[in-house]
Figure 1 (tube, helix red, strand yellow):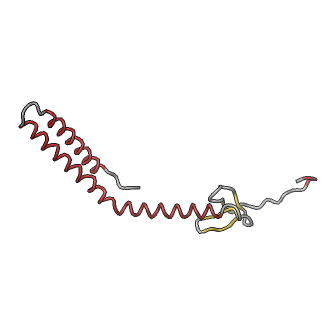
Figure 2 (cartoon, rainbow, N blue to C red):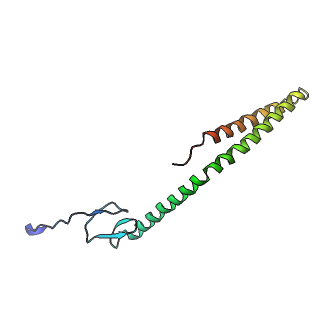
Figure 3 (tube, rainbow, N blue to C red):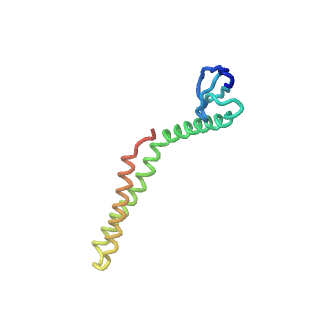
Length: 126
């Protein structure tokens, strides 16, 4: 650029997947997951590609197991709510000094109900 010399600009053919720099044909290294800066970002692009593939695999597993997750949340909730109802029933039928059973049963019933509602409202992974 000194002495009035002009640089020749090469058109960018894409951007590096790792550092987002514009790449000409000479600087670009084609990786499986996209373009990378030659001798600079190739390893990072390979790692990013592996991470994206791993995320896709995990997502597919999550979608497959979603119905089981809903059941795994609802069943313990229903069991806890049932125990709560039994504690409330036992507390009302017992000596009035055993109010702790009613209080404990109410807490169990509320928590169990919360788990059941949470399971019903559970949304599948996006």
